[in-house]
Amino acid sequence: MRGVVVALGGNALQRSGGPGDWAEARRHMRATAAALVEVVRDGRALAVTHGNGPQVGQLLRQNEIAEREVPPRPLDALGAESQGQIGYLIAQELEAALARARLPRSVLVFVSRMEVAVRDPAFRRPTKPVGRFYPDAEARLLRKRTGWTLVYDGARGGWRRVVPSPQPTRWVEAEAVRSLLGRSWGERVVPVIAGGGGVPVIRNRTGGFDGVEAVIDKDRSAAVVAEALGVEDLAIVTDVPGVAVGFGKTWERWLGEVTPDELAQHAKNGEFAEGSMGPKVEAVLRFLDHGGHVGTIADIPSLRRALRGEAGTRVVRTAR
Ligand code: ADP
Ligand code: MG
Image 1: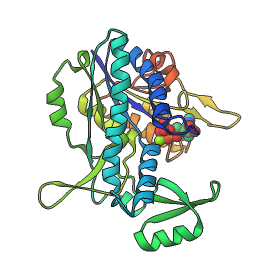
Image 2 (image 1 turned 60 degrees about the horizontal axis):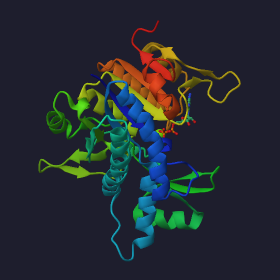
Image 3 (image 1 turned 30 degrees about the vertical axis):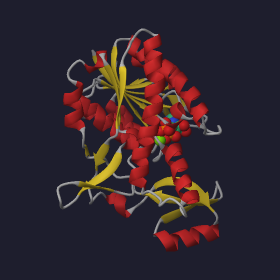
Image 4 (image 1 turned 90 degrees about the vertical axis):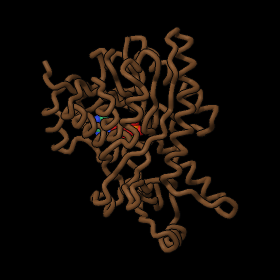
């Protein structure tokens, strides 16, 4: 069975601008699940990973509001919490959809850790915005009280906390999950792995790990997971139907099938924004570099056709 890791972006999980409540999350996931069922129907062994930005934002806000009564949890614990919450949502909706389609699978959620390097330069330069926007006075106070780095976003009118976004170096549970799943996992199981990029941890002196206040880009982790599972395909699902050059410009052009070299050249030319399309392109290139066959970037409506080579942006080692 040809295996695929599908990485679900924020939009595949939660409608932006929606109320952000659980009922809506379920409705939205039902639509996403329908697209994933088609992938399984096409004979693929499916593994899923996902983002967690809006959900961690909500958990951080809960922390703030409740802090007089419930001690706030650190960011790594909230990352784990979001994996459980979103993983449960995917399990509920996807398992039911697969059963209805007579393609029964158990959807298993693995709360996952990703090792990062203490020396990763990202720790000296926090870039990833988390949580809500703060007015001037509150931002000053927070900086003093917590030592956070806050950056001003003029367009959205406020200060926002930024945290480091280090590179994942190793999926901690990789060996264990691989042996648990066995060889023909695709026929029985859909694993959900490394949600939100996995919880970032660093090795400590006692042989264990410590969680860190950082966020790993879920697209980068998806490449690590895809490599560890040895799948042929990595599909990154987002809210645009693929990768464009001249994105948003009059000369915009959407890419179909491309080689890694072509894509790397576009990246060098600065075509892909750092916090959004950049890491997806980087993840796909890394995946191909480490033995992957095809890296796909698509949206939910075009996912099935993209995996059949008929839509989306497909990065293959030898394009025709
Ligand atoms: P996700 O939650 O799926 O990770 P992101 O917002 O991080 O979504 O990334 C997807 C976004 O990347 C698109 O909505 C688009 O605005 C942006 N983007 C930046 N550069 C490009 C590009 N060259 N081609 C396509 N999309 C781009
Ligand atoms: Mg993103």
